[in-house]
View 1: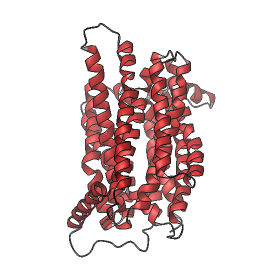
View 2 (view 1 turned 180 degrees about the vertical axis):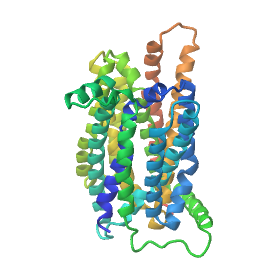
View 3 (view 1 turned 135 degrees about the horizontal axis):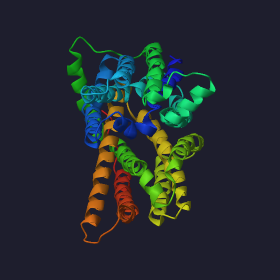
View 4 (view 1 turned 180 degrees about the horizontal axis):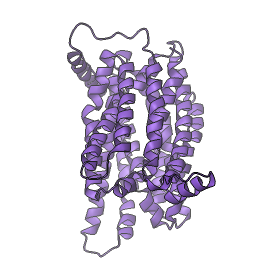
Amino acid sequence: MSRNIPLFIAFRVFFNARFYYPVLGVLFLDLGLSLEQYAILNVIWAATILLLEIPSGALADVIGRRWMVILAGALMVAEMAVFAFAPVGEWLFPLLVFNRILSGVAEACASGADEALAYDSLPIEGRDEKWRAVLANLIKWSSGAFFVAMIVGALAFDRHFLEAAAAFIGWSGGVGNSTRWPVYLTLATSIPALLCALAMREPTDFKPASGRHPMHEALEKIIAGARFVFFNKRIRLLLLCAIFFDSVVRLFLTFGSNYYRLIGIPEFANGFLGSFYALLGILAAVIARRAASKLTPSVVFPLLAALIFAGLLGLCWATPIWGVWVVLPFGLSMPIMSYFVSSYLNQWTDSTLRATVLSFRGMALNIGYAAAGIGFAAITSSIRASGTVLSENAIFGKALLSLPVAFAVGWIVLMVLAWRIRREPLRSAN
């Protein structure tokens, strides 16, 4: 089973480092879609993931994690083929709706199943320590791959660069006529993602479904997983911390370009900042790996809270040009948080429920991010409705002032919950 570990890392790298990410919005618009259609496609994608996240994890615990990872890889090939070859015209939007559904199903199938498969492939003796080493390597490779995807994807979308590169090598095939080169590159990397999934093997101690219908057993897994998550105080607090931290950092990523404009960073630098953000993951992996053997959860998460809070304060100051330093705390906190949440969640979860519980994590993080986005939108709407005429930049700057206050209040609530948990005995995972 040892080969599952490098295959798991390779699968994650090929599955997640997509070349079209840095240009996704403008790519859809250049293909002829409206802003409303682009928004609808995003809603369809998110809704598909939320709908299937937990059922797919439960099904993985019933029929086998390998089969769900293979399905995710096959669906990635299918979704990228649809994206790459959908004709421009009246069929474009319906086919891209199909693409978003396929993409959402693929994300749901991979979420939890690949991680559970890799974790259970490790020897039982020293498994938790070995898993931390795997996570550190995963963060390093993913960060490096994301850095490459950001740079190459942006360059592949630039027609002038493509034409200059083609002229340099003596090729006159009109490569700059298509805006889908980042999509073609991602289609190419979907093939090794599927091959990695096919090469994985199910751990020998995995027990597949009994003679009953797999969906019945999957439903039982969902119920058991929900009981485990909601009634085990330690797991519940861990997921609440993950939701809280993840939603704040992802909110910054969503509005990062708005913040850079607010502090006077030229727009051409956004791609370089995104690449630098990705490279911070390599440093974060080193920090997390060294801290794992020395720090307990009661120390790790307050330190992460302090790091994120420092970044939020930096957003409020919005120092021209130099305010870009906030990329450091946010870029370090996200991979470190992911490292420790995965480490503790796998360590505290029984193998029979592992993929199901990891799927609960994925769904919870997406719901938390949606709630944070709705809350930030409500804040900006209230500022706009206050009667004072302000520019969009000014409204955004005033909205940023609320973030450290909201974070401090939320962290106090979590600390109170943690204090109560320490005073009460933990319930069994069963």
